[in-house]
Length: 378
Image (spheres, rainbow, N blue to C red):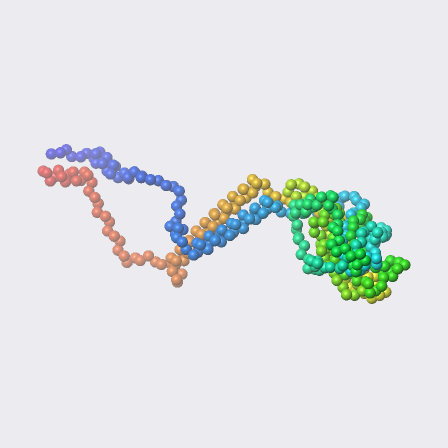
């Protein structure tokens, strides 16, 4: 007869049998839910929307990195200057012999500059010029573009182009040139002989037509490629006595691009007014009244560095991915919540009439089986 198993041996065998099986594998990383791998219309639409949003944000950052954003700084005018360069180029539908150009400033000086400006006989052609109200000038022009346009023309080429259709003693006149004026409020006006200042000659009314095309009107250094508000504008009239008035506010402007290149010039805003008049009740002509503002503006182009661009790009991509994952999980949770509630809004109860399964039968231990074997043997 075999010796009975001691309690110490029984507890030892129970401890061995109760130990769990060794781990075959261990993975602590987060797994993608099976529902995320299903191809659905909702998932496709969400992917397209996120891709478009991500592309838009990346393009915004890339544009700021490549072209920069303008930054405007305003100061009280500190530069002391006595002279200001004025550039003028226009074609008027009146023969050159009968046109006179004058400047009168706030000091009281009157400059007769008809001889300083060059006059070419030509024919009156509108071409691609438009009314001032229809012109679409670029607003918020970047400093890089302005400086690039100014550098496209060398100092030797900063001259007015030749008259396209030169017609000696033609029905129209092209008046153009550059002059220095006092840096105070002034008035540049184009009138006809005998209908402005005192003149020994009187212009025949049949020859008077002040329809005009302005090719260039600017202040400061002459840069033909830089667009100004009055450039390529046209005004026409059928009356012999007509008054055209332009009111300009001139501001000293400094452009600084991303490469720290500097350009000092002047820009202006303009409003216009025109009306017909009768002989003896007004002076027909084209009047440019300019006021110099006591302030200056600096347009500085600010860009991001390559390191800042990469950091912001990584932040955008990471933020979009995290937010989209959070939103998708929240939507799935809400959808599952309402699905459990049912159509009536109440949570589906768990059935209570189902009997619980019987407890599993207790398995005999090794000691119990050994005792039963010993008793049977006896």
